[in-house]
Length: 86
Image 1 (tube, helix red, strand yellow):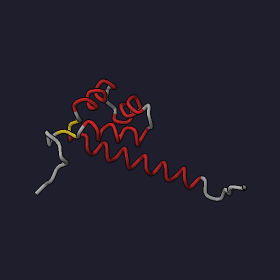
Image 2: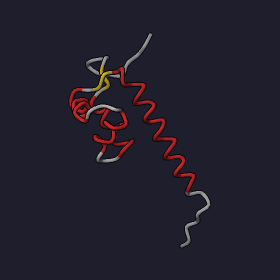
Image 3: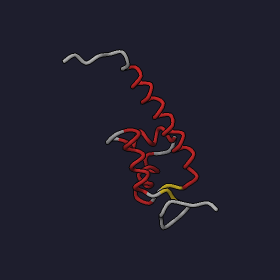
């Protein structure tokens, strides 16, 4: 049996989840960047933040978050070897 997140429409990723993903991935000015990353018009992202996003975009969201996580980890590793001198 497949479970879904609590939402009125199980075919949509809730708008708040879309916004949380966007902020986590790109910071406060996330909508244009999310649109570019997802290869959709900005209007689609604005609609998702009001109405929710079709669940068929789930794989793209997961891929985006995985890629961002790898990049952030890579940048964290770039700091290894530096010392803070107080």
